[in-house]
Figure (cartoon, helix red, strand yellow):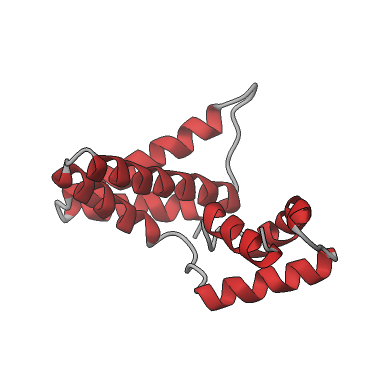
Length: 150
């Protein structure tokens, strides 16, 4: 089953179960997918990888919003954003552990033949496709910076 159809089926099940949080979250992500499909010159059907990128982008928005609400002292709104993020996380690939990320970055540095902070871009080009949504870009960049010694 394609990811978009799975999202639709899960939203229907959540509606029947009267799960307001899950229904609203899945409706929001399906709207984002549809918006992405009609963006540009011609409408098109997104592949599963593209749908996954939209889900990841929406999950990142939820994390950032939760941090902003926490900073503003709006804990009830922050909790809602975290709950929505947890629903979206179910559709994302399992996140890499710190040890796995360290190993992948070390291998990417060796493959790129990088040495020192100026080579960060080269290493990121090698490691990003390997990680493919299993770690946040900021987390990857921080580990690359740490290993390159900047």
